Image 1 (tube, helix red, strand yellow):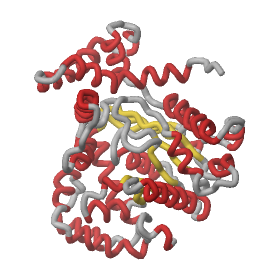
Image 2 (cartoon, rainbow, N blue to C red; image 1 turned 30 degrees about the vertical axis):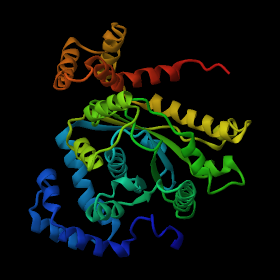
Image 3 (cartoon, helix red, strand yellow; image 1 turned 60 degrees about the horizontal axis):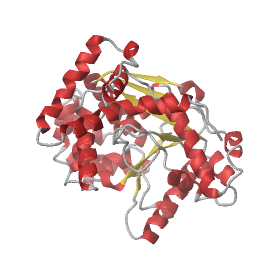
Length: 381
């Protein structure tokens, strides 16, 4: 484990010290102000100081926080496909990525509700805002993936991440959550990066099929009726299109985390897709390395997009963007009026190109419809 010291999550023996640091942090009152955990600051500190394990932290602190998010900002969380997972098994849960922290946290909550062992979570180094965030993350089975540095440093970090994921899955027999690509989906098009699939195989080069098969890859689809940070994503995509690039502002990731947590999300659905079996991978293996990883990514995309829950908002946005009534049977006039009323937030940006903004925003909701329809189309070799 010494090799993974810089990126690993905490062990149980490190939890008491981490809980003490969290309890002594002046910012914990901000957590209590929002999450309403039914205790005051001193009571919260008392609870923290009696937690001695990762499991205790997740059940006594993280679980009530997620329940508060579900209660305050959603119209319910529903989960399908969970019965396909063996409580004794281990899986690499490859998920679409719509919210910086909630995608994994909501799935972890679903695992708890279904009596499944909790999983490890890969998170970007950009989420380590301060020591409090670091202690919360690493006490919550989260391990760091750092993608910075020179080309050689970047490669070495990818190799280390690949080794650690395989160590957790194969040696420790633990499940791992990872996003299907670096960064959240901004435009509503969920796409697995073939480079991610290649990274997963870096830690075992003798047999690329066996390297992926032993990880037990399971595609996960997370769907929000009201897209997380939809306004922030629209502005980012607009500025990227206008300027050719986008430069993050200080504390922007923190703002996205807070916005995603607090924003009303409507209904939220999680679907656990069909595992990529060894037979699935063998069928994709009659090609060169680059094409193999591209094909694997495509299968994962098909299963994620097939499991994505389409809500009336998605069909309304598709019809508004295309200027048709193709999907009018999928929503009511009242639902369309509610969505159009929500669109009025664009009036705050009249100094920008409003038609472009409108198209980008509608695309965030409309593109999942096209992604789903593509899954249904027959493929031609």
